[in-house]
Image 1 (cartoon, rainbow, N blue to C red):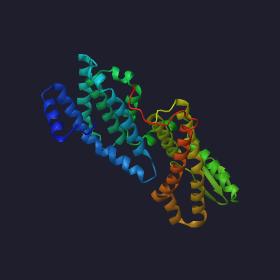
Image 2: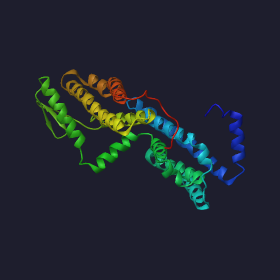
Image 3: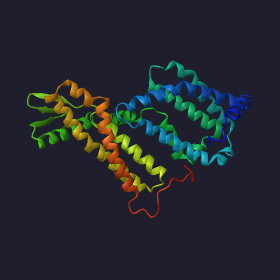
Image 4: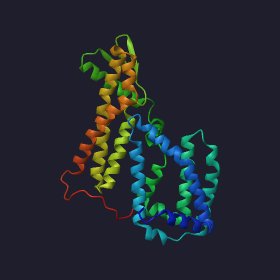
Length: 310
């Protein structure tokens, strides 16, 4: 795909595109993309420090979505676009590109505006039918545009579920684990009480972010390896279970650090290094579990298939 796009050819295509109104609109969309890209990439890279798989999550879905559309490029070229569709797409591009520089204080707002630019490009180039003809590919591309889907999922979860459900559940599991190793711990809502001390359990110590990451990675691998949906669903559920199980010892370690080991130890395990250690172990286990599920009674070797619609 990229081998044929040499710099001179890219420059020639760009020069030719400026000769048409639609080409100038796409160029404006590209400028908006250059404006948003540092925000998108910077946010993704910052999540790595805390053991998040957002970079792999977003990059994987973006690659899968674009690859699916690339395999259908001949069909896409022949898709008719009405004048109304092109006009609506151009209006989305111009309006969104205009507002993007004025939203520097909000990553979420920039992501939403860039999403409208992408929708405008798709509508003006291929028409609205691209979204229902290639729904999976379109959804994967749109999802990848938000730089921290774990944060977004957490906000959606807390808006539709009773407040602090995850925190209370984590505190309860942590107190049971502490009791197993001889600590007189009890759970009081989202607090773990040990003697006269209480430890507040708050996001992201709930393990919710890891559960979302493993769910997304299981889905991504399943789609890449062309697995059936029951295997993908089983792998996603297993990812959530693994995240919950591996979050318990981290909560225990943090509680013990507060009780006995001091602030420096707590800061280590609560910070980027501690997060990377736990995440590394968790992702290693998840890797083998997910691949075991995808290879379970598999009639043929797993292989990615570039053909087919999204």
